[in-house]
Image (tube, rainbow, N blue to C red; front, side):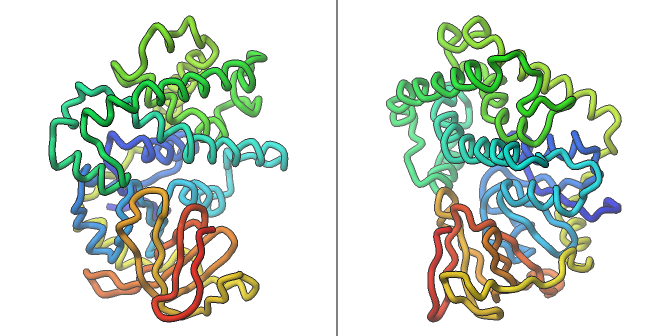
Length: 333
């Protein structure tokens, strides 16, 4: 059994990035299926789809596979326009985008540095090795401990920014909406994650007395999610083989796009290229024929190993590099 809108979300339950998408789907009341993935590599379901990208979550709609939560949330806004929760005014869109960049490219990397050293996973050599492959830095306990004071200083500044600016006037939601919007998701996710992690933040610096408006906002958001979840469609859980069969037998959700003839890379439609993230997970590259290239998106055509049908892999331009396999240019946009 699969959802009528063809959405399948590949994730694991403790991924804070996956929470961004799950929260969005819940607040929108969008039906979807999930396929739970291992917390570490290998992920055989992704291999079966022909996807080398290693980060979680991944979302498919038909035979279009979307990577990176920046792009996933954008696509859900575009493909399901009735009842969107994204900003509509240009100035609100700017706030939403700036919050996305701030939390993904700044706050979360510091949040990951304050994971409690007592956390059992830090004693698991397989998990530690996997994190080091993912982040490109040491996850040894002694190194994590050395970076913790500096990370806490940066996080304290981040909490203070929210407390003294966007939430200072007592508003319920970031854009003064009646219900939480995409801007709230973009802003709240690392703070929500940290607030639920016992031992991550010292109470003397990060207690509710220090940042009452931030914690009240987190509590409101949790309550709104709980309320939305009561009326949301039941999530369908698919086993890996079921999800892969469903996707490979589906049609494409999007028609073939175009390659921007004015793009500085001067790449051509149908050219063999490879694309990969440059901020994390950069040891794993997708390769295929270039289907589309816009200012926001890279689309490659590859072939699933199961069913041998073409699949389109979508990457954002932000923090991704695309390179011709033979000849052509290279991008970090």
